[in-house]
Image (cartoon, rainbow, N blue to C red; front, side, top):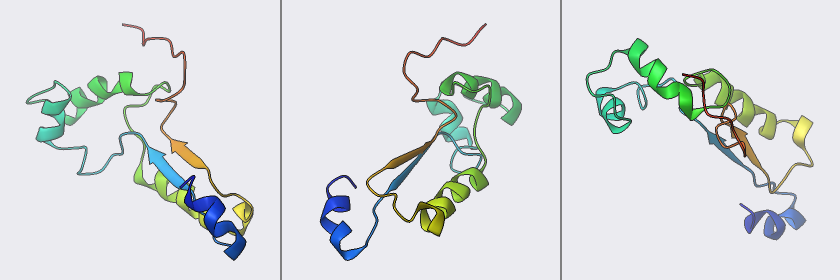
Length: 103
């Protein structure tokens, strides 16, 4: 994205990327992912508690519509001069100097 944005800008082509946290979809909501995150056999409610520390905001995951809205913003005229950026829809998961969640 950072290489393509300046190369394609003279052609009025914008290049951006979207980086989500865990999203409430079947790709995350399944036993294999629960096990990967150290929660084998967890229910959805138990997994929600396990995913909370991934994000700075007190949510275990974001909704698919949140990612879609970011993509729509980038595709809209409202961002017509936005290029070469990353949009992090990650509930603060990659924010620096995050305090650990309270127990």
